[in-house]
Structure formats: C-alpha cells, structure tokens
Length: 145
Image 1: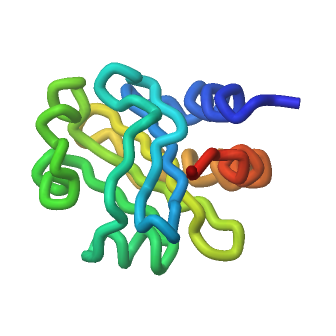
Image 2 (image 1 turned 120 degrees about the vertical axis):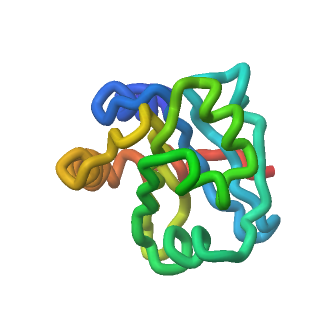
C-alpha cells in the first residue's frame, strides 16, 4: 500500500514538470491545502490559500475543467505568486481538477513557457485519469485540521 507522498511522487515522475504541487480543497474552511510539493522550500506542504471566487475557480473548481496557461502573463492574473513561479524557471501552468463526484483537489504542473501543447495536455490528463482512484484515495487521507 502506497502512502500519499509515494502516490504523488510517482505521479510527478509520470507527468513531469519543473514544479508540481497537489492541493486538496477544504470547503468548510474555504481553503486549498497543499499536500504535496516538488519544491518544499518555496511551496511547503503546510501552505494554504483561500478558495477565492473568480474565473479560475469557476473553471477549475466549479466546472471541473483544466486550466492551461503557456506564459506568465496568462497565469499572473490568477496566481499572486507568479514571480516565485517564474524564478523557478516556470512559464506555463496546467491545473487539473480531481473529482470524486465534485472536485476535491487539483494537480498543478508547471514548466517552461509554451510547454503545454494540446498533445502534452492530453497526455497528462490521460495519466491523471488513469491514476484517479489512487489520487482520490491519497487526497482523502489529507489532514484538513
């Protein structure tokens, strides 16, 4: 039986990305809690951010659709930490909602600018869907207290 960290680390190996985080939604608290990170100094697993309202939340959390941005300018309006992301060499972002009925969290993959072509997005969505059951199980073990 794999631990959540092992599930996420294996997923990161499969989907790639210079930076990958996984967040679990804590709807009661109105927060997204980081449960995995490839960069613990810049993005520690203790990190949270408010589940704000807006176009990104409507698309990813409410409608359950992936968000793709291939330049910093495309995601800077949604990610207040865009300067940190850019300093890590990342200029594109793919946020994939994970559903268990409703969206329960996201897999966030960041890489160089213009990385997320339609083919690369489709490949990563397929990998995440194939592993959805184990990702959901790992997310369900998150300590939201």
